[in-house]
Image (tube, rainbow over all chains, first blue to last red; front, side, top):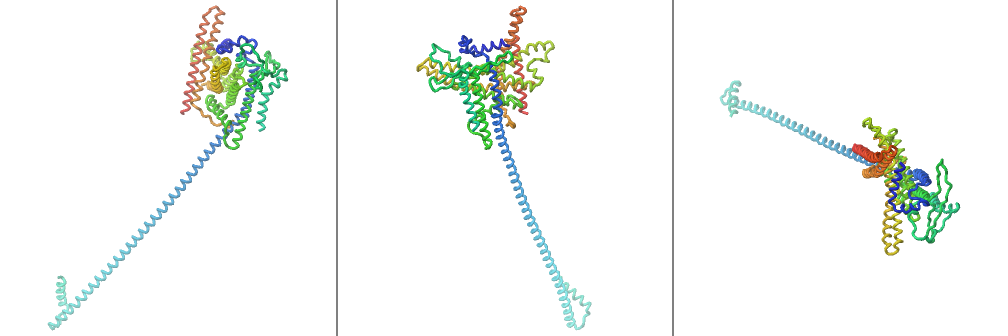
Length: 192
Length: 315
Length: 89
């Protein structure tokens, strides 16, 4: 492993002209590719200390601050969303209530109108009926009076005729038989 | 405020302590020796590690050479470990301190802004955008589910490499990421992270990423393919971090060599003709600025991809 | 880091990553060829059959590396298809 690796390293470095010139005096001066154990140890020490320091005093607080900020933003967004949903809900409720009230009013109005209509109709009907009854009664009584009057008139007429005729012929006509004859005559008159 | 002054003090310490300490340890800052004869190789000392650093100075040639102290090497078993600060070690310290200080300030700006309930403005916001982009668009989609644990490592890798790259472009600075030891160590850390991630995600199935045993093959073929393919699988494991290390090192080094060569040409031409290399070096410098970001990004992206790849290997 | 914001997977960056992961395959190719080449040379020197196993090693390494690439390519494609399936579900 060592041989191919160092061969590779040489290959990689051969391209740099600086190395070519330094190789002549490499004996005294540190070469470009010389591993330096002390430097490697220092690299590890410094790196590990730096990592611990950065982790605890820099990256930790910074990332935490970023996370906190992000959390705050997320929270604010969630709160806004919640508030909006609540407002929407309230508005919807309000709208529903208004709608309900309007419906109720409409219903009352319609009901009132219907009741009024019905009442009017009933009153009208009743009035009409009473009127008809009154007219009917009046007609009936008129008819009755008329019949009575006609009968009276007729009887009077018969009596008059009989009396007139009796006086005329001087004898008292038999009431029953003659009355019948006059009445027949009168009926024939009335028939015209 | 106390933190700000603390960071400033630390930054000053890194700048000032090196020469001060060096003086105490028997070495000191001095003006660079003048009067070199003939041509001098300015490129190699600039891109390689060294035992001295340059600091700004108010008199010509406007910099001092400070020799860094030499500490007695530690002995770990048979290993000799020389932990003396070198140029690139100082750059690692400087980069880490600047990055940590800057990031802590950004973190505090965020804490203050969060108390106000708002996002920070200006610089902290830009850094936050970078962190979030790297985390949300590069690390998490590539690492896979539950990749939170890898975020600190990968973010640190990105910002540390970026800081070191940028420090190499600053006057008097040096590119620690142009040193193969540094990039190899960073790649080694990625390698370890990848393997540990694979071990944790796959359990026993992790062995499948190292050894090749295909039960669909004829019985005779199985051991043969095992012997041929297992080394290739292991090479594949190793070449990934190797490519990472070489890529970062080569990109940072090559750019600096080009810039330095062009700067050398400015003085070589020494006339109206030097306008051409001057212009070109400016252009290459801008390109280098882009490359500094790009290579830090690529290192982080590939590390994320490798972690994601091995975590999903059981599929 | 206790409560991080949710990640926003981006198709573009994911495919960019998928393409970038093949950037290191060249090294694997070269490394496996070299490994089998040196192995073959070692065997040749042991039993004196130069250059039989060296050549055999080169081709074995090449074939193995290509097969390994093919396998990882197929695995990635299958994963990609799975991920897409998850996305549409």
